[in-house]
Image 1 (cartoon, rainbow, N blue to C red):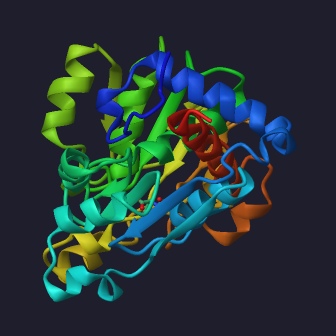
Image 2: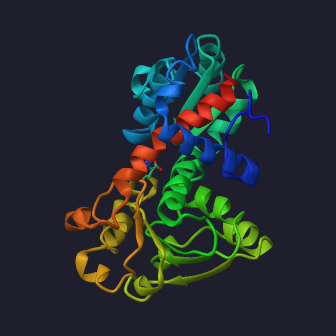
Image 3: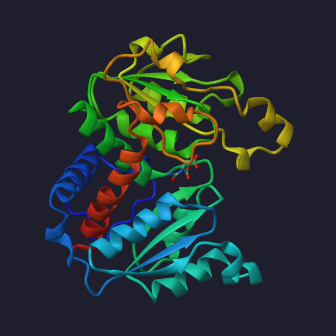
Length: 307
Ligand code: NCD
């Protein structure tokens, strides 16, 4: 399929064919990255981060540099002209003239869609509020398929803040393309997945799913557990966050009951959801996951630029 020149705003707009193509290409690049080291020569990627980020921004920058391209951008909204009152549209129109591709993160849901309407170059959404984060999903799919050898027939536990967690929203949609997966949502009542996802993705596509309140109830049956942080910045009241912030902790004691080949994922940053002692467990894949993120982003940039 032709991906050249297209934006990636949400996993709701993509096909299984698109996901497979990027994940497979990411796997190829992972095996022989040197083949691609000059692919994006002469091209410029702009990274506009209006919200904090370590992994996603640096992972995109690393991906572009590893393809032989160059990067420009900012990592702090306060140093952009938006702090002078410039509109997002004007910033995007301007940066379109400076670059071949824009990666952006913004605190408002829908910001990437708005940017795409005025941009003169493709836009990649690197997170818009509590809505979507499609390139994290590409990372997650490569990690799961490298570890399990398949993206089908898996029991996948999604744990933590499923209300505001954009990585989970993007991932649920993507997993719905693959057959016979069962999703188990591990969440406190306050942080259950939004109704619009329940009514669309889950119902229309007939995804097998259930909800539980604790890790202990289901840890023994899972093939994958996807831990997430409680999204402090999306809460209106600090007291509500404080009540929920330590609700889940994955530690060695709970993992005693898990399958020998469980895959433990986390988009990171971790706050208190996974005990540091788990890092030495071979089932802990979250740092590999961060590494895979570079390769799927190389694949995505390569295909969008059509180089
Ligand atoms: C995630 C995000 O920004 O949504 N982080 C990331 O991109 N790796 C998850 C999070 O911040 O909790």
